Image (cartoon, rainbow, N blue to C red; front, side, top):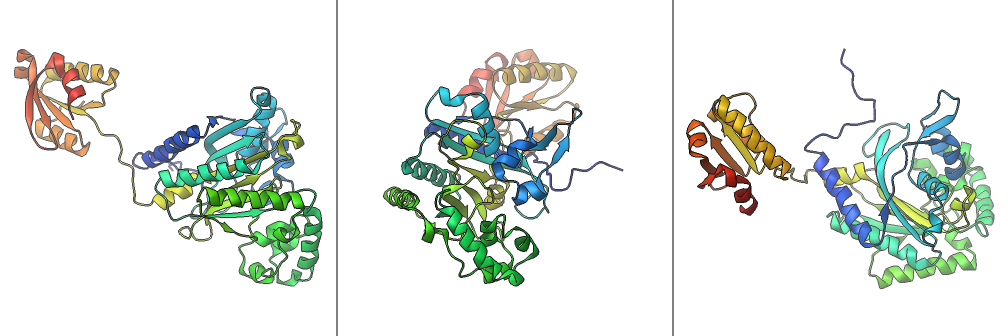
Length: 416
């Protein structure tokens, strides 16, 4: 019996990977222009990191993490999200001593045990960015401007920005209690998950996708109505800067995040193309997170983009794979040896070149060149070897030119 991939963990094959590379390369270009540097963290962290940062009563920690004990009985977890590992690395490596403002971005796989469905997998990939050390609302607007530009650059227009404020430790507790009291009066209309978590994590009830919970909470109190003066001023300033930058957005007072560390500005980029999994990017402020993990009291803001969801939105709009600049069709053992040397020298010089390794007929080799979409073909036989030159065929227009084998690299470098 053959071995198959783990359910919810997918291969990314040639023909697909080019779209992924395009999305990642564009992120590096856009984020780099905004002053961000790449950081890479391990895929496995101590379980305590996620319990302390994400929150022990969140769905991620309670039900979705891949957690195991290693041979030394240490509890380890495959990272379910990217922000906490970046914060751990930021603190451990004292990056705040290098610059008062840190702008970091990451790419890579995350892991959550949940039912695989369109846009949601057990191994999934994120592109994320974090800014540490700036409390001013202008950085919120700049992060959102960068996210907006990224979607423009990758050619996805069917997304819209939604923003909200979740308040802060000063104003959220009173609102939280009011929301709990509201939910208690409607417990019989809530799903089992919401009945279980309404006291420990009441904001998540507002984000429940179950129709009954949506109906039961349609007139629930909103955090925006309970913001303290500082949070209200901050949110107003964020909106003012977004308007100045001409970035379209809508305020969604019901939008919450599934992680406990978020405060003040929260946001999502949403679409109607992916069914219930409508968020393709999300994030917000986490001003107390670094300090709660043992670091300095620094504010922070960031986001993560779901790469699989971007790929789904790109649909059949494939990124063309690289094609060979040259295919060498060799006839006879001596010509095959010379073709191998020519190909290897071209490859070492950075030219994408291919040849036939099996001694097939010229007709079969030309079919192979066409299948690979090679730009040029060089036919090499005994006569060409004796003459030291061969016909270079342009596969697009069938034109040919004679080239010396010793000048092949130079000719290809100047060819269109």
